[in-house]
Length: 35
Image 1: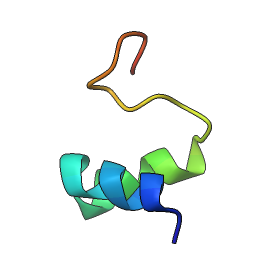
Image 2 (image 1 turned 90 degrees about the horizontal axis):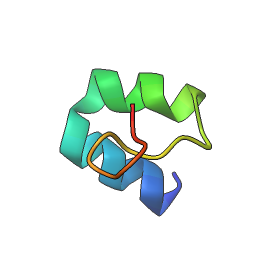
Image 3 (image 1 turned 30 degrees about the vertical axis):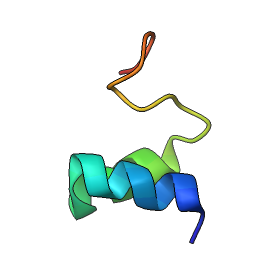
Image 4 (image 1 turned 60 degrees about the vertical axis):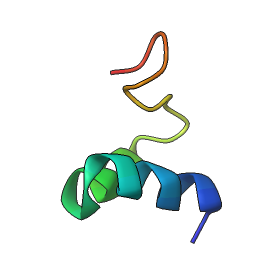
């Protein structure tokens, strides 16, 4: 698993993290321009 994906999963929770993984390359929601 990509370390960035694991970071997103840790921040957003496993279900949302998995969904966001499908949307890469997308900034995580904590950063400017994030969703």
